[in-house]
Amino acid sequence: MSFSLLRAPIRRAASCWIASQSSAQKSAQNIHPDSANTAVKSGVQAAKVKANFVPTKEDYQNVYNKIAELLDEAGDYDDGSYAPVVLRLAWHCSGTYDKDSKTATTLQCVLPRSLSHGANAGLNVARELMAKIKEEFPWISYGDLWTLGGVAAVQEMAGPKIPWRPGRIDGVAAQATPDGRLPDASQGSDHLRKIFGRMGFNDQEIVALSGAHAVGRCHTTRSGFEGPWTFSPTTVTNDYFKLLFNEKWVWKKWNGPKQLEDKSTGTLMMLPTDYVLVQDKSYKKFAKAYADDNDLFFKDFSAVVAKLFELGVPTEQWVTPEPWIMKNVDEK
Ligand code: HEM
Image (cartoon, rainbow, N blue to C red; front, side):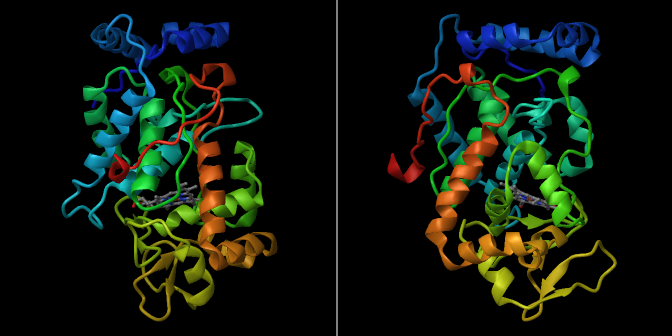
């Protein structure tokens, strides 16, 4: 696994990043062993990139297409698609942002120190997949690659279009944020408000974001929790919200962490943080609206995921003032 960080996918962006570094960050880079390693690898990788290569929207579409192809090559893995775990990778990279200290722009998972954080268990599946893409397109930053992976995952699972644009520049290990910035599934509504508030999200956005649990599943070997949230874990729908309201949820009797199961089949699950969406009055209002209206959920989900994937990136770094809409593979 390579953690080399390409610092200059686009010259303009690179100069902005270097200019925006504090002297503390610069000196931290000089002394941190991971950073030195990173710099060497980055140099090797940069040498592979053609000197004057400036990627176009088409080049990024080619990356999208390649990701979409790989998402489908999952064989027996989970429910037959890598898309959920790739979406989770994109979210975890973006979700360590702190709006006050402005630390952790999109992309902390790429940093060696973050990989050991408990919340990132299991993401190696997605990282290895993305590494294959990176080999083929070494000019793209990890930040752009992993968030584009998230965009492809949502869109290829029949979800809404997620406006996206390139311009993220990868950090170095010395900038990795401490463990504990991602949500803890065993907690309640105050915890969600605190964690997502730190990123700059309100109640409505927290609920819309949680709708991502329409897809994928929990793994005892990763988080300790077990099972999918819906009967169609590779299709983005508002079923997660419908099920929250329409099923009777009971605490699962097992030796694992506290989670709920649907009374009728016992095959679906909800995390304590999912269930608070119908317990907390403010969350419940939005959850009900999404359960009743898939179009509304898609509209809000698209906006909030686009916001998530852009957290903390300085405006001047974007290569385009307006985000792009990438084509799905079947639109080619
Ligand atoms: C509300 C706070 C959240 C908590 C506490 C939470 C917690 C979890 C946990 C415990 C898992 C299971 C991991 C495993 O065992 O493999 C999981 C999976 C997942 N989460 Fe979340 N999550 C949250 C928010 C989000 C958000 C905002 C997104 C995306 C926008 C997201 C997307 C996913 C996806 C797609 C999976 C399935 C991964 C797979 O199938 O491998 N989650 N989440």
